[in-house]
Length: 114
Length: 114
Image (cartoon, rainbow over all chains, first blue to last red; front, side):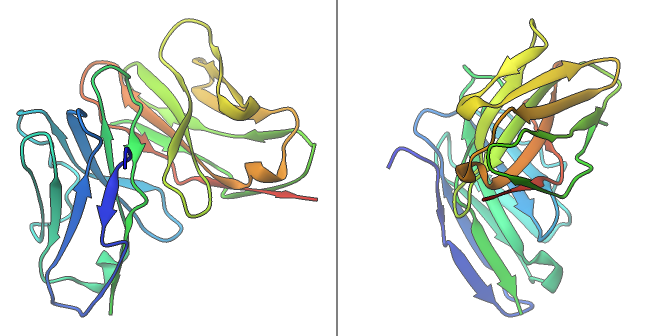
């Protein structure tokens, strides 16, 4: 498809387990973002990749969170030793350099930590 | 650091009535301003944006917003809503000076009733 694709759409895991969330951005988009949306709260910035520049990791809440991106394609967000407060919808978005602030979002990965 | 405040978490309105969704921002430097919409079971999409020029900007589906620098506001308006406008609306800011990180508000749930 032409949009941002995220997988899995739903993930239920036990406390202490590691999880990986995947994002396929729109082809040709140089920027990729991860946001977190907790129930009843706004979107919380996690990390931002722009081309080959060093990623902006300023939003990662702890060292249990990490993300990688291969070139200008797929990105993986990894949460180690999950905690119940990690339960949220994790949103990925991509954008091109041509349109300031226009992010294209995926439908998100809903993570539930039991 | 910049921040966004959406005072109304929920706004119920009858169909064909006008609506205003409020957004105020805080920043020590100039910003770009955005409204995003999230329809049920869909990803966020851009509704409209203010980068420069006319302070009144028009977006999709008949929505418009006005940038008021003195009041640091960017309220979203529609003169006559439709059932299909039921969605969550997010206001966001981005610093003009560099970086493409969007800071989002907590969202306003617009519920249009018959």
